[in-house]
Amino acid sequence: MLVVLANDLPPAVRGRMKLWFTEPRANVFVSGIKDSVALTVIDYLQKHCPPESGVMIFRSLPKAPGYEIQTIGPTRKMLIEISGLQLIVETLKNQ
Image 1 (tube, helix red, strand yellow):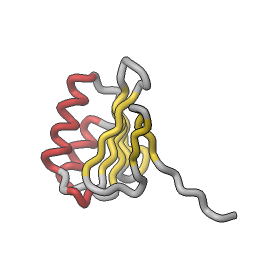
Image 2: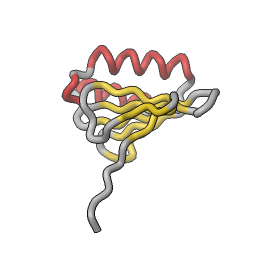
Image 3: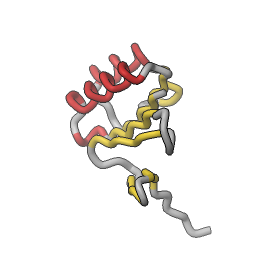
Image 4: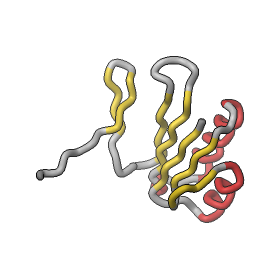
């Protein structure tokens, strides 16, 4: 499975993504494509998305922890790695 979240995609890239993915929300793409195709899509995104696109890519893996996260440019949420585990930083708002 591949999930792609973006702040803003170029129109040509977004159009191509709609061929392979379901877009449940604007700039949120989900697909159950195979690993070899997923790698091709990730390569395409890396070549055609400028850093200001703010892309975060989640790819499922057959080994622990079961996923891999990649980013292109700055994203709205920060990605960190602790002991080999990729995590997304959530900030708490004052209640």
